[in-house]
Image (cartoon, rainbow, N blue to C red; front, side, top):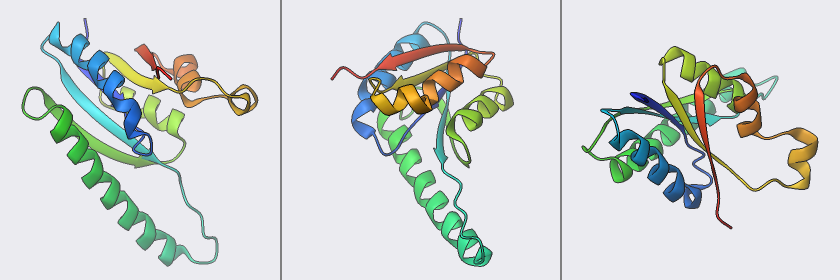
Length: 143
């Protein structure tokens, strides 16, 4: 019985969000649920230029936060309580970390259809399924 739902959002794949939000809202409608939206940016390393790296990461994190807030406003509005967070690091690890930190009951996340590289490198959804202590609903894209 989910009460707090984590929605990891890949802002680069907005066309995949319809199915993810539909499934999450269906789950939330059965309970008095709140949402935690999460976007994870890869960690950037410029080596000899740490001040440039910090300024750039601050800038893109702010842009991602505004984008994620817009997505939440459009998709959830005032119908559900929600919060939106942007983290940097390994997507799978940050999703599991956020699920633990926010004590969520359910993770609802998209998974792209497997490609050859996914078999070699693994997917974020696969990593989360193997490492999270939470219930997970993986939503496949329909293409």
